Length: 150
Ligand SMILES: Cc1cc2nc3c(=O)[nH]c(=O)nc-3n(C[C@H](O)[C@H](O)[C@H](O)COP(=O)(O)O)c2cc1C
Image (cartoon, rainbow, N blue to C red):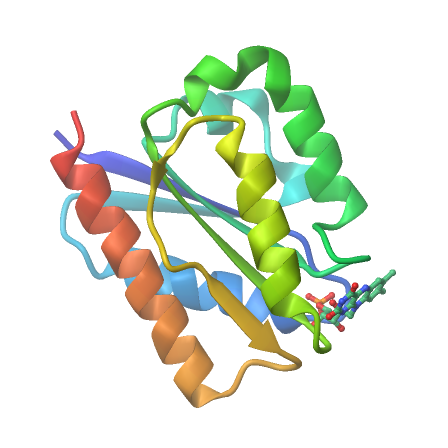
C-alpha cells in the first residue's frame, strides 16, 4: 500500500521553503509514496492524521522553531498518539545558531515519540546546491522508511 509523506514548513524569507521543496522532491523519488508539501498555516488536521511520515522545517527563531510551528506542536499535543512510532525528521535554517535550533526542535518533537530519521539538517543562510542535495537525501530516506513502516 502507498504511503503519504507530509512536509510541513514555515518560512519568512524563503530559505527554509527551499529546503522544504528539496525534501519533498527527494521523497517523491520513492515509488509508492505520495508527498504533501504545505506551509504550516495551511496544514489541516486531516493532513496530519492521514500522513505516514513527517518532515518538519522551520527557520531558527530565538534558538528554537518559529512561533507558528510551535503553535502547531502545541495544538497537536493532545493528539500526540498520531505521530507516535511514525518516521519523522527536522530541518532548519539559521544565521549561525541553526545547530542549536535543530537540537532544540528535535527535543520538542521527541515529546511525540516519532521513529527518528536522523541526522536532521541545519543550514546556514540560503541553501546552496549541496544543502539542497542533502535535503533531497533526507526526504528520500524518510520516504523509504515510511514504506517499510507498518
Ligand atoms: C525573529 C527571528 C529570530 C531569529 N533567531 C535566530 C536564532 O536564534 N538563531 C539563528 O541562527 N538565526 C536566527 N534568525 C535568523 C533566521 O533563522 C534565518 O534568517 C533563517 O534562514 C530564515 O529562514 P526563512 O528564510 O525560511 O524565514 C532569526 C530570525 C528572526 C526573524
